[in-house]
Image (cartoon, rainbow, N blue to C red):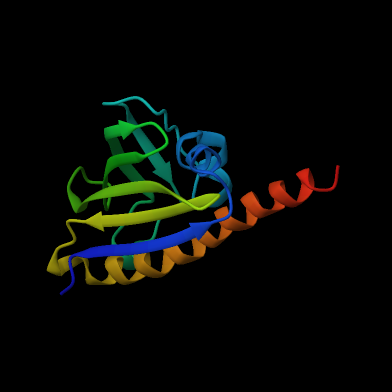
Length: 149
């Protein structure tokens, strides 16, 4: 089984603009899920969704900021389970931003999946694509609004 998700996206927006959507709780909520994220090393936060019994997830993902290099890199743990205090999902999410012309090359790596996480791995692989498209749509809408001045 593949044990990590890797993706890459190219944005027309600068790394600073994309960074905002990775590090501001209210903007993260627009494209990913409700959260109490703060861009502070060591900060523990949660993402919340409706429970997903088919994946044995209670809908609360427990995370901790592990590394933060403003406008370049963000790494956090991502854990989940059925709510009994046992985490059946224990992964690391790593975002890397690089300048690409006038825009940004955004890399995602989520690692640490186990054999028992196959269904979650498949769901998250597809989910990242859907959620990132939402972020792209929000960023493009802002860019289009600013060009109408």
